[in-house]
View 1: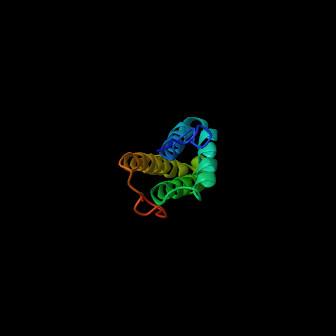
View 2 (view 1 turned 90 degrees about the vertical axis):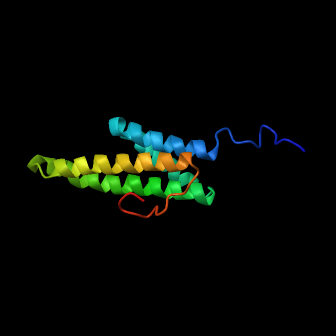
View 3 (view 1 turned 90 degrees about the horizontal axis):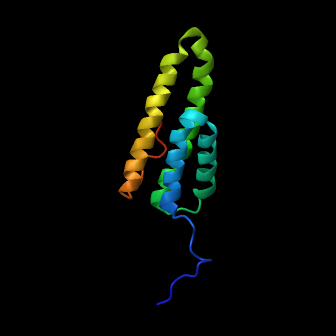
Length: 120
C-alpha cells in the first residue's frame, strides 16, 4: 500500500471548505465581503464536489443570491419602514439556512432540497 505524496493530497479537505463557506456567511453579517468570498468559493467548487457536498454548495449559492435580492429590495425600503421586517426576515431566514447546513454537513448528509426558497 502506498500513501499519496504530499503534492497529491489537498491542503484542505472538501468538507472543511464547505464549512469555511458557512463560516464566511456568518462573518458576512458584519463585513459583507466575506459572504462574497464564500459564494465565489462555492461557485468554483460546486462542479468538482461529490453529490453530498455538491448539494451544500448549491444550497450556499442559493442562500447568497436569494439573500442578496432580499437586501437589495429591503435596504431602500427601510426609508419607509417597510424594509425593516423584510430585513429581519432575511436575517432569520439566512441564519436558519446556515445553521441547518452546518448541522447536516456535520452528519455528512446532503441538503434535501438545495433549490428551495425556504429552508432546504
